Image (cartoon, rainbow, N blue to C red):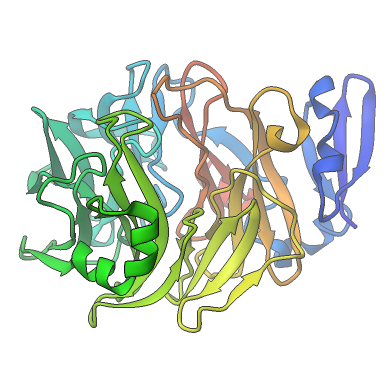
Length: 421
């Protein structure tokens, strides 16, 4: 059984860490926690447990910067495919609602601004900024003069293109040549359907309509939404671009920047070429694609589950503990996972979060970082850590709101850290 060593003001306390780690975390808020390292069986299996060891170097990407520096979401790595740059949203506004899209050069530490005066919905997903064209360009959405636009910027030339208006941006992969679009969840207007934007031609086509989804899931949608209009919301393309997952939304009357802006429910997976449903579950959770574009990692009732979208089989990961509040995602090779976890949901006290990496087959996990997370951007929707692997699987990026600024952190293995020193 792995062992958790806690350095406190009274000395070293040893605690056993099991499938139910809540007992191990009880009482930690009464101590001054100086460091946490995983030892015992986990330390002996570093090569098998996952790409990032607990001894990884953890640091902010922008050192000592008086600003928010936020990566967008746990399904999109902020590091470029070649590992040279980090894409982030930077803001000096206390609420984080207006800022810049910038790239950070990992080798030199230089910063370059790609877009200024970017207005976002919240500090939770920032501008949904993400890499496209193999890392040669970035795409994001922005509220300009009361209208949402989706824009791209070529990293080398700095040239910006407005790709769509009246829509927001879903999630794609850096290698894909299309990005998904959808209408704002609180007021989709004419854009209730899933659209795909071709980055080469600029063409926008309807890939799936909300009415098609209603017809395929009529009974459930009638029970959930009644006669209210629904729209396709928050689409995430599979790595091979052949499938998409999303949920449905209906306006709830709260409007823009309001927790009651919309009601959002369901987890739908569709095959795009045949416009057919391949998987459905009533609970969204926080799903993420496996690199094989068939399986999903999700979290329901704080427990990890693996979903086979071809067969519909759901496998509960019983050999790992609960991760309340988690946003789990796979490593690039699909063998490991990373997630954030609300420690305070188990141990009580101030909002305390952690980042955990682990291995499914071995049922092992390790703590990467632990931090208070109740400050940062004063947005109506708070920033969460949203951890995600680097493209090479040797680093983990996550947001931390431990002081007046929400900051992007990175945890590097010793090998990777030495290469960047």
